[in-house]
Length: 76
Image 1 (spheres, rainbow, N blue to C red):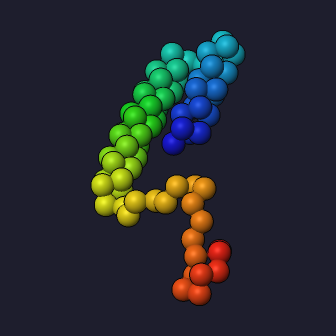
Image 2: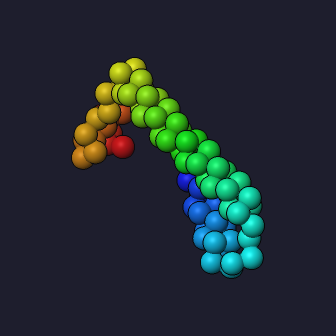
């Protein structure tokens, strides 16, 4: 949805700079951009909530430099 928001922003700027877009068209695109922005904000909020939930439930991760051994003692 961030890509959609960026695309709408570019399209709106093109309409504004063209001088040929009607005020109604500009108003519609501004509303479209506002709704896209709301979706981006909502999606970011959801992602943060999901990451927080995952952090509470996920097993701890071993340090990146930690090695593991097999039952035979071989390094993996």
